[in-house]
Length: 599
Image (cartoon, rainbow, N blue to C red; front, side):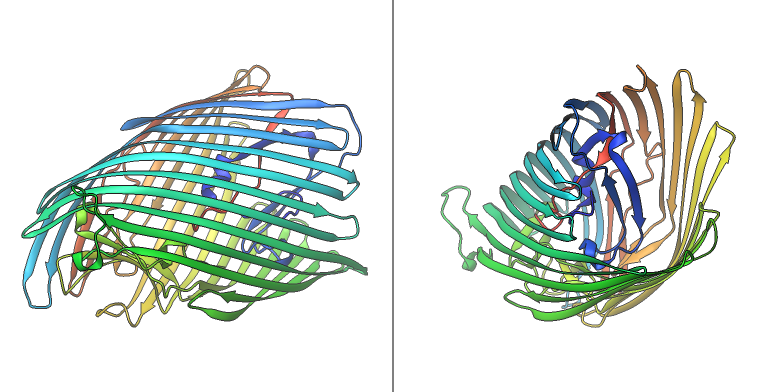
């Protein structure tokens, strides 16, 4: 987050909406593994504080970026960003365009057992091809009225199109043509005062119409239809926050956040020959809905420093969540206790809590067809948010070696699962709430350096994992698994003049579980060569990801009556990118729009 502002970050847009600012404007950066409630972000965050300017000459800085990649098919990205600052005013502009073609294969091997005892071997080979364009654009402006007194506005927009074809052969023969378009508009206003008051408002509009033409044959069953569907989201968010410094190391904070959204969605089936709308009597389900969601979040917290060695930060948030199905109150405590017995040695204890909301489309009472028709995607109107609580201990040695241990419990954990129907020859993908998920883990992060030519970091993670669902269709489960993760990043400085660096990164993940899935061992090795020139204003980067094509897993199910293996294609990716900066720019993360729940 930037300057402590409330953000709605999503991983995808965090990397696509980059902002560049002069390094001289950065005052400090705070790393938090467990953010207090006043940041209105649960979990880890980095808070970057900028120096406040009340005068000065005007200046322009910017960045140009281009990328080409080859992952079976080609892909391209172009980006331009610009920052203007003068006196009390600053503005930034960003535009990016990603486009290219895609190719994938999925080989399915399954044995489908029905309730009547009949057994049906299923073998299919699917090939998918597609092309897409994605445009992202952003305009932001800050006006510094005085020191710590600021008014900010930002607009984020997005437009994307995709066209896809899939063909399936084997036990099932089918062809699918689909097209989709996404529009995103987001406006946000923030106001900060020198006496600790913060207020803001955010409006998001999202619309995603799509269509699909499917022809499928399997045994005596036929599917021929054309579908049109659309998701339209209007979301508003308002917040008010206050912070007080009470003296003697005491700080107090409290605030309220209100979020509401309206989801207007539909899905209709049509006869591809006559164009007439099909009804439920044709075994296809039309859907139209208007669904409203409201969330009130009220929090209060405090922080206290006990000398130079001990610091406490605690908060409690109460949240009311209301939908047409659910009306519930939840509590979210957060506690951070830091103890520094000696310089460079830090012991941290934290209690955190979080909530994970389901995707908007996942709660619609809709049925879609994927994989040529043998696979159905079902919505779940009864889906509820998952609630996570975690205890964690962290020890930082010599300000660089990090050791952690934790335990978390997630009530109503939700994930999309596959189930082979016992009533008919179809597999159903549906997001369900489990009873809970539990994890206990340990982690060690060990950096090391060899003079000025090697900088490395080794991260080791060991996990005990449990998932339980007592009403999972007709096959309840309680599964446990121990697994490990190892990751290593190495940066070799081949030369300082010219500036030439080689990066080699490796990752391995042992066998794991997800619901009734068994996830096999996976891993990858990536390599990149970076060349900086023109006084570090220009950077040329050559890379190859997943050199040995081992990063994609082939999940399998061997649980009671369920027997499925999906083999997904995996391709190494080659690429080259070029970056040119002018005016003293350095890359900087910037607020992004939360699109994680959109279709």
